[in-house]
Image (cartoon, rainbow, N blue to C red; front, side, top):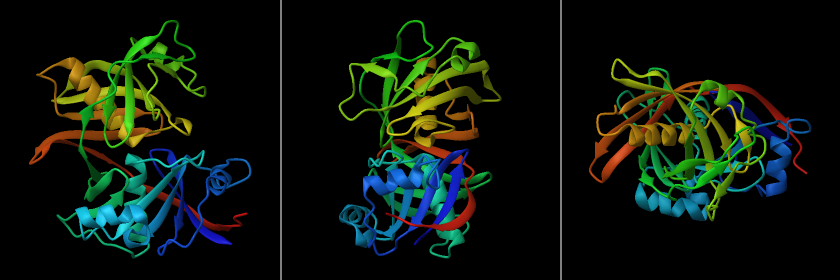
Length: 290
């Protein structure tokens, strides 16, 4: 029997497995079984809580930041490995604090190792804020085809530690009419795939210096989810890019599972993007892993 905790961030839900010394053989089949909503716990992915020193990937995290004791070993629901998860890392940090494995003192941050590098998490008014680090335009402007769209639409490739393509739509009706269970088709197709976000600006776009948009997402290796943290950040970055130089650096992004905040800010190595929002632990249990 393996103990687990179920958690979520704005409806993006995860099975959390505490495996501090990295002894569990977390195969793709086991991840799929855990995430199965009919025969398993159910989730968009698995967060394995493991010490950085216990994984080969953790060596890079410790080299970058010696205080990054914990590594977020994140797997998508289909068993594939993902570089980063913006909602997941807030849930991961919340679990560490609730389990007594880490603390975040007032005004300080908690460094967490990921396959996209070390990410710093701090407390915020509505839960936690994570510095997602540098972002970049990446992957060009592929055409996106999705069920429910009458014609392909151009997207914008953005990398925030994992790959995204953001597609602008004209109305809430178009957004509501999408069927995002089938994987959207991108042309040209990214080599490693991408999360695909579809976004509609609010009216007005900017209120009191804050940008407002609505978004739905198809996550690579999962399907449509109620929320995608890195996708929210990519969406805000894309809309700011389209809006031009006078666009704000603070955004509120509405997803089916709630609302998340995005902030762009300068750092020594370039512009960073931060994501803020809630994290909740729902229940605990045990399950047989075949």
